[in-house]
Length: 104
Image 1: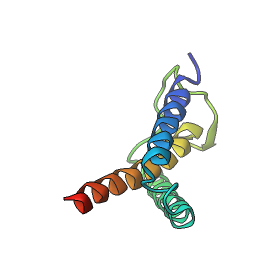
Image 2: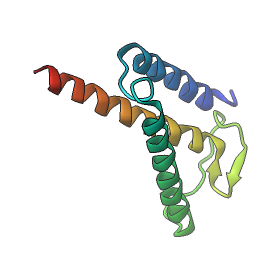
Image 3: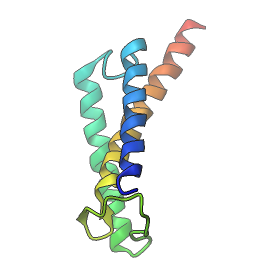
Image 4: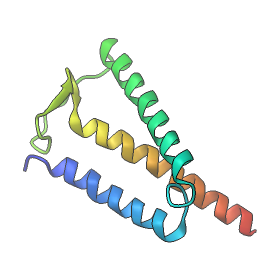
């Protein structure tokens, strides 16, 4: 059961990447700015997570779906993959919204 959460994140990210490629919504439309935005959002969200962990606002939960690999205390490797996915998803969602608005 270990690794199921990471597999779900990666599968979802592949789906979003395929939508992005098909409709050219973010990375496939303008790769350099999109990748810079994803990197910047990833850094921001990791900083927020580290701050929240440091303040004791949340910690690592117990789940058999996690791999058990931590990048830092209370910061599982899955969290980093989720943050990258969330950043890409946000750009794809924004690109889709702008496509719809511009066609109206």
